[in-house]
Image (tube, rainbow, N blue to C red):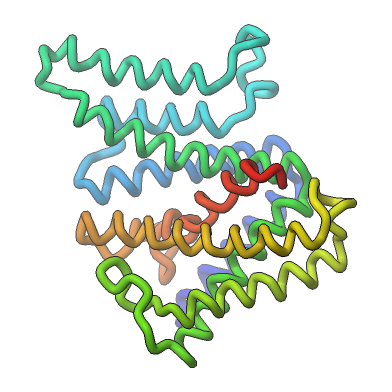
Length: 266
């Protein structure tokens, strides 16, 4: 427990100034976290990041995270960084030809999905901060409230397993408690930062979307649990002593921020 607390405090001391500053600092943080996320997924599969496909997967994720206007301004006006990502995909697929099909489309699929999953998640994390600190913190608070609420309600009232084949400790009561906690936190937050003034929706719509975000965040957590169960690992990594890896901490956020973008909050 002491190790977890120390890690959390140190992480917050480093994290808070970066998201407060925003701009290039957050973009570099997002890119770094994306590379670490790619590394952790490759590690779970028993592959190394320092390989042809590992490096390309990391580069593809970075292409997705870093904004074109600041980092790839030399591209034609109507070209997006997604085209750079697709260029990486083309190289991976083209390897099947160069290798005479010893490297197949099935093998190329893993690094592509990894870079897309991690890259799009952290891209929208960066986009949220670009929109405003208020929007970014809203997403973070909803995820944190859901996690804490699900844990507390699950411990106190948990009786019915949610999806035991994927995550044996999660309960339906915990999941509902997580949603309720997120709604309470969102309501307080929206009283301080009214929806129509700081977001693209009114307060009532934002509360309804909070339910969606809370459910999606929990689903993102379950997706990460399914990946770890598939590869038979306890944590995605060990970069955060007592907390596991980056994906263990950001699994919900990798799903929530893209959905916030989808619903026009970002």
